Length: 241
Image 1 (tube, rainbow, N blue to C red):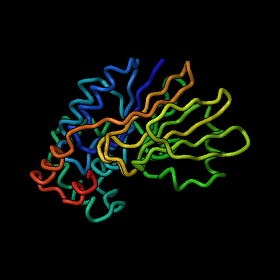
Image 2 (cartoon, one colour):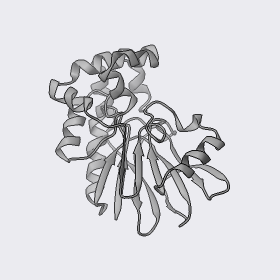
Image 3 (cartoon, rainbow, N blue to C red):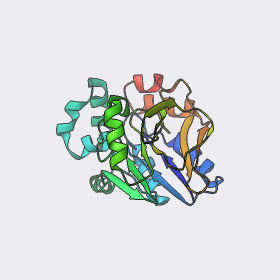
Image 4 (cartoon, one colour):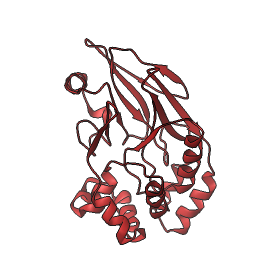
């Protein structure tokens, strides 16, 4: 089956809508979201409503974690804290209840889904893990592949039983090895930080053992305008350009 994996929508409803349109024509059987659906962007409520409308299972991200418990605001830089405080005011009580119920990880279709780093961290970045840590983690997972987000950058980590290989991903289809174990950073729908401002997501074909990386164009100007209208820090608009 084909599985679409999205992450880090960050309140960017314009990007999310275009990604959903792209997914609808991709022949996938399931869609999973890795969290950070809110924060930075101007339409967090619309993003959550769309996730629920399409019944897309989501993981908790570090931004949802901070909305659930303000003690985690100390983890963020001052600009991100301002953004999160404003973001919470944009959310309905129903959406806050939904966020409070998000799990720290999911295991489905022989895949592990987590926001930051397996098994269940929403705050650890993939790039923080040493090769020894990556090897131990992958060896300890029964699942062939783990999907993460959090860094906003596409990355493939492979383990062949002996060595770890890391490489960035671009708009491509990658053949996976039958005996390999993988961590895939799926990039960001709403705020990529890899030098290309298209929305990003991946499709995993567990029969063909292929990973397809998709870039999706959307109306960036619309989101930038709404960031200013919402009174969010202008740095969030600059990052989209």
